[in-house]
Amino acid sequence: MLRIISLLAIFVALSSFDIFDRDGSAERIYLEHRHKTGNHIEYYPPADMPEVYIDTDEMEIILVADGFANYYVVDIVSQVTMLSVIYTQIGGYGDSIDISSLPDGYYHIIVTSSNNNVFDGYFTIETE
Image (cartoon, rainbow, N blue to C red; front, top):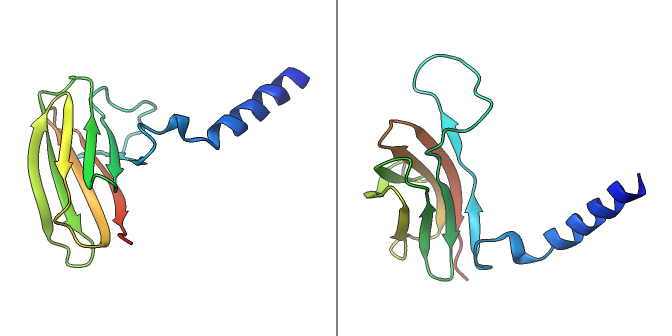
């Protein structure tokens, strides 16, 4: 029992540092997998589910993928105007998207893989 508590204490201490972040300035955008048809339960995310980060220092969205999809279509929608502000396609191993033209606000990101899996999440841009 003491070993479990020690390991938990170490994990909590390490998680307070930025070692789990991609590079310290990037913050992860958590995506959810959206099913196109039916109501069924999946216990594991699809293999082509990318990881998405926002780096407000560099003003870019970073999509990291493993090549399980040939490409990803990325649509960023402003939650104020409900209009698409960025719509682009990137390669199956990921890339970065310049968001320096976006004003402060709340955004919805929709990532569709070439395998027709849809993932979405939300992020906020706040400049100082």
